[in-house]
Image (tube, rainbow, N blue to C red; front, side):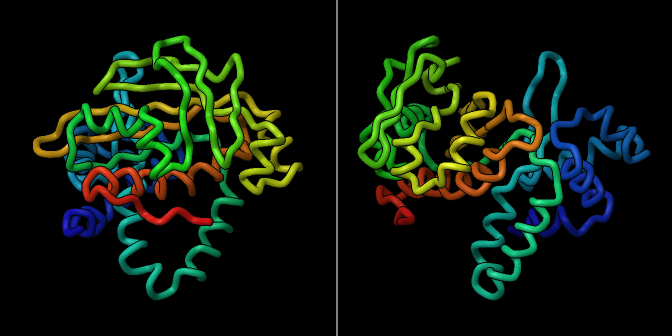
Length: 260
């Protein structure tokens, strides 16, 4: 965590994070223009933020997009904030989320002491996913194949619930699941909320897997949200806990306790 606090100590780097908080997924050129900073300075500061895992990047054609990464801040919250003043901080965070637009992609990067092959298995094998996610997938994991999701004893399948990309050990992408009434009953989601979710266009989740020394870098991107999406704030709370469970299972062999 020393790298995180060192990165946050510089006011210019905090300005970069503020800019990405206002509009995530910016190019280097956009960040320079928005902050009136020299390109070389911005590049150096971004390198520090990336090294601290506070910023992660994705590619859109030839463009390199920069995103805030919640994982280090979540680790700080787990270690200190939750211990001392969790309820007050969560109340402020809820207020902040309610006042902000929630249509930006969710991007989360973490490093797991495992292999690309083991991580791929953990993302696709029902024997693994049921342990940290509580979901069993049914699919041959070929692009275009339909996926079924079994959760809380209820199976959900749909013609548009499909695998989009599948490169074992490297990249997996699929459309998000279908919000049926049986799913909502099992998940404890009110019908009013379920109806709003069902009215939104189907979102997408992508897992990018990269070797990183003795670890594997996992970047989870959840995108394609409607303006003012009901789903976006819901997944921003769920993914950090889910990825923590995945990481713990792979590194220790034991899953984190799942919330009731």
